[in-house]
Figure 1 (cartoon, rainbow, N blue to C red):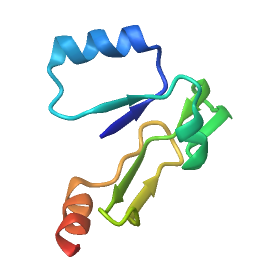
Figure 2: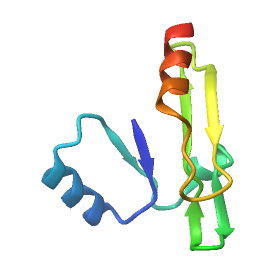
Figure 3: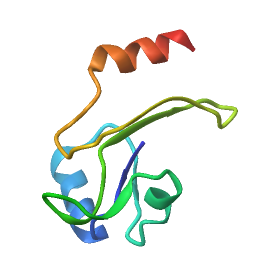
Figure 4: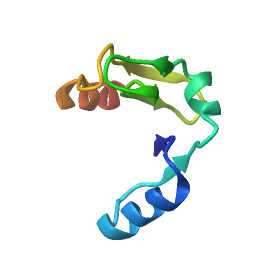
Length: 88
């Protein structure tokens, strides 16, 4: 599942246009972003934005892997995420 804080109309249009293969939670008030510690008011390249982040949460609701970027264009390597999934 992805979490985005954009306006619902724009997100729904994007989902319809691209046919995303996973669910999206629209968090316009940024409650989820704040709860996971990824929202920040002022960044170098944007205002009121979430840092790129990945959380793997198991069926027991435990976070098994997390990555929170320091910069907007920073992402974890795909191999690292897949290894975290396999380690479960």
